[in-house]
Amino acid sequence: MSDFVTFILAIISAMLIDNVVLSRFYGICPFLGVSKKVKSSLGMGIAVVFVILVATCVCWPLYTYILEPAGIPFMDTVAYILVIASLVQLVGLFIKKYSPSLYKSLGIYLPLITTNCAVLGVVQTNTDTGLRFIDALANGLGTSIGFLVIIVVFSCIRTRLESANTPKAFKGLPIALITAAIMAIALMGLQGLFAGI
Amino acid sequence: MANTKRYVITAITLGLICAASGALIGVTNAITAKRIDQNEKDNIQRGFAEIYGQNPVVSDPKPIEGKDYTNQVYTVEIEGVEGVQYAFRADGSNMYGKISMLVGFDSLNQFKGMSIIANTQTYASTLNQNYIDKIKTAENKSEKIEDVKCGATYGATLIRDMIHEAQEVAKQINPKE
Amino acid sequence: MKREKGQTKKNFLKGIIQENPLLVSILGTCPALATTKSLEAAIGMGILFTIVLLCSNVLVSLLRKLIPDEIRTPAYIVIIATFVTMVKMFANAFLPELYSTLGVFISLIVVNCIVLGRAEAYASKNTVFDSFIDGLGMGVGYTMALCIMAFFRELIGTGGFTFGQIFTFIPYTALIIPGAENFKISVFQNPAGAFIVFGLILAVMAFYKNRKAEMKAWEIKQAKLKAAEDAKKKLEAQKANVGGQQ
Image (cartoon, rainbow over all chains, first blue to last red):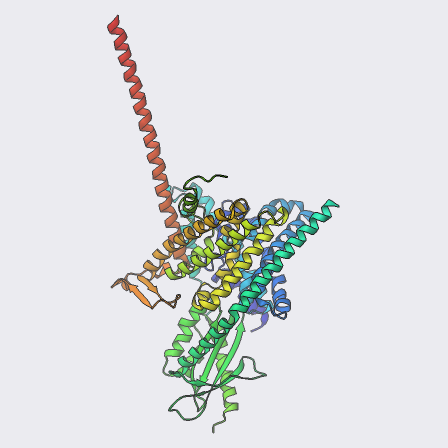
């Protein structure tokens, strides 16, 4: 199979079948915290896509060409989190300078991304599982787009839930979590989608 | 000027913290590295016991070069069984992660069994249930190896290719006609 | 500075009950959902987490006057990442089963909001001893919350509990309720079950909180009614008194 097809397949499987939030449990905090409004969840999702892509492009070469040859692969977590934290700052400064309007809508989510497990989780699994660069990129892209899709869909459901007649004890987070469970069950149905290939 | 001084102090503090962190982790690594190696060795010994049924006498590994997956060969001797048997260490990876395993053959180069040392595939549990466990329990193991449709087809195909390559290497090392 | 009596105890208990990091503040949810498949894994995760939290709290509190304000967050992150890496290595060396079960979630303690949050909000402002107690309370509270989730997930998902698979120094024991294998609901072992259990626990907590509030409101209302009645009676008595005098 050509590399292109495997690339696309890897994106789809990281995005839907093995969704970050609903089956790998990365990034639950922003998933529950920033999903009250559709607009803010869209902003958070796009910011995450951006940071994960850049972080993958920086951290994979960092590990393969610097940490590993230098004999200190065990410094990976420290290096990654420093890279991610400074990257988030840099991206923030960059956007602020060149597109103030974008900064206005994305800026407040950027600091939250440093503590989003999705970013560190993806970067860490990329090198822990020894993926090639193109696979790492596919994993990053699929994971982050999966996060974007799920958080937007979830926020749409949550805005409806606000006005729904739920029992008093379930108001707010509990019913949102049960909704997430039903979404996870729905995505379980996609497992084995590529079994025939 | 005051600003510059402040920047310098900040940079030095951060540098010191990083240096201290590196030193601490380095020391921890020195303490734990031996133990981690020993764990891996125990793991491999357990793998051999799983393939050959009892604790076999295993030689030190010899490297194999120029193959895609197979990278080490062991000679295995078992009490009461004649002939030298060969086992191979194979490492492979695909877009879902890495697989490291031992592949064992008997003295007639028939596939004897395999043992997974590390499996970081995303669908590791599906792969275990629907492919690896079926091979381990099957009567006719070679037939089950070919049946890779299991819900984690890429991982299964990788394992099949690794076993095939090890089989070829076994035939080269231990020619039986 | 004089310490109030019982302050240490209060400081410790607040992490367990009033400010439980998982059940009240809803922080650190990722490992709570991912590592609560079995009770044993939850206990392991809780212990590793508590160790990291204790060490980072103590060190941050020690260095609180040395670290300039501008680089507070990066410095804390480096400190936390250092301890996480050390804990990861020790786990890999001495508890390899725990290490392979928890996988990447040991590394993800670095970005756990609780550790960074406690460093920022508490340890950077308080003494070493207070920070230590705070870390201990928060760690124990988090571990207990994880155990509650894992208890229900393992009980419903597998029909009992197994020990000795991760902590291999304990002999292997499987406490399966007889006949339970026909009634287990295996979806509770899947990701979906984690969300359901967490949602239900939060709902139960909200229910009791609501009821407490309602009881309080009812009591206040009763007290008010009683007071009003008393005042009325008093007034009537006064009137009667006035009438009698006339």
